[in-house]
Image (cartoon, rainbow over all chains, first blue to last red; front, side):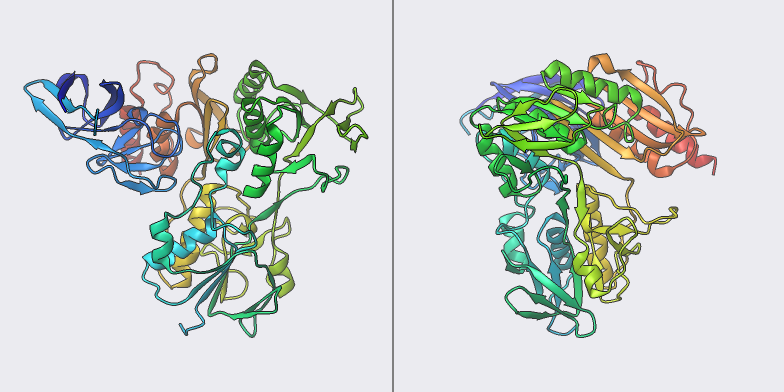
Length: 105
Length: 417
């Protein structure tokens, strides 16, 4: 498993998200209180990208059906989502943001 | 409460959420759940979508396996309640069993409305209300038939897109001259009609259907007065009738337009009996007449309200009404209500398939419709919750960061109070 550089810190403001590609996996990268987090980008409920969702209070809300996940833990917080979201390790070196490649996990 | 506990009549979305909420709020007594179908509580929204189109049927359970087990519900499937005795406080089942209750929750849902001129038990006629209904239609779609959908409401439109995706050729008949014009701004209706036609769905608006005839060939003829098309399968999606007869026969009050009458805490006219979900008609603050809401959100919210009220706990504040529909690849969300005479402002262009309309009265937002713009809709939700006038000038500008704008409007609207 490798750390893959996915973004620079200034690409995201607080409570913003974007999709990054890590070894072929679509991953949502978030910035909350100047810390960075990553989850699978695809909602566990329907075909929707959480990177296009609404980020507030450490949670992301799916743009399609308003299911909510805790970004730090991946926990499904309210219906209609019931299956937790996979989370990925993130590290910051200077302005560079790295995500642990999920390949082979 | 005594050991007779709580009986929930019905086993749909609302019933399951109510049972779950009772446990979350610490209720340790018996919960008996009586379901007419053979299934555990399942989500209905996918019945008109993924259940019809997905290679593998999606997971539909309302509660996770773990939550279901933990809730310790005494569940009887394939069983029907025939009467409720309000004095003796018991429910009688078809097999003669009597189940006593301390509190009874009616979550009996509704039935698909029938059209009088359609042979409704014919094997080529479909209604989509239950999982078994949806599976039967899915099986019929395997041979890529010609399908007619009767009714251009949200459900009919979803089924049309799904049948098309499953390879059927689809014609949709709607009596009105435009789609969903009571619920959507005109531009949104027009967008929806154009997308249906782009997708290759035959759309017959202003259709006056007077009969459906089964032909010896096995096909179905639709008598419309303007050419009588023949199809292989007919799907009727003309609305829902609330299952309120168990309540009315027991002597509970039913609203004039149908639906078990409940107050803000989901209590019926009997203090020990509550009701939630599609079967109800609720008196809500700020409204003169009780209203029925057939939505996933309402099924959940009334379930939580009824559960809290049954335990004597404070009831949650009702949220702004919200629902979604997935039309083929497009997601539409509606927040608030389409009161008459609203003035609409628009952000985005329907031609780009991403747009948000807000309907306001004297600058106070009361209705919002999003096409593929759920996150924008979410950003302005606090403004509808607040219910105060907003300055709309910058809403439509592309350069406006909607989330930041909404927060600014929220604080200035609050500050003027």
